[in-house]
Length: 120
Image 1 (cartoon, helix red, strand yellow):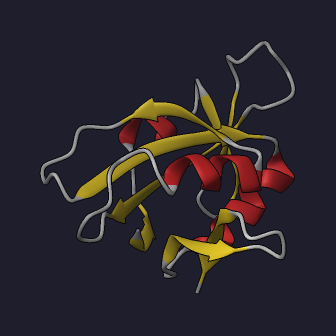
Image 2 (tube, rainbow, N blue to C red):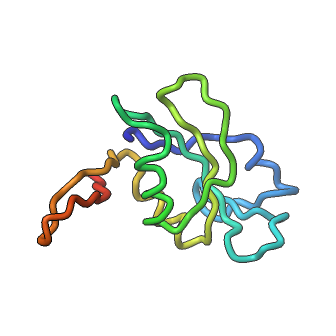
């Protein structure tokens, strides 16, 4: 995945439901769960041969965030999501903006093939 970008989503600008916390990060005022109430909307491009599951699943695990909403995509190679999580995790997720993220196979010291997440 590459070209991570913040996207504007009208839903997040509704001040009766969302409060801007800092640039591009909103607090969901209606999420009564209380611990993962922050949101950010991002788009990303799939690279040739990538599917929509990986490395996205690994990004979710690394940054401890979840997909709050799948947004409509005009292009099969561009994915758009609203991510949810606690404030610190969403702030950390912002660090991938403008970067390339992919999975790379490697052989560990025991000879087993493993996969690691690369962010560049």
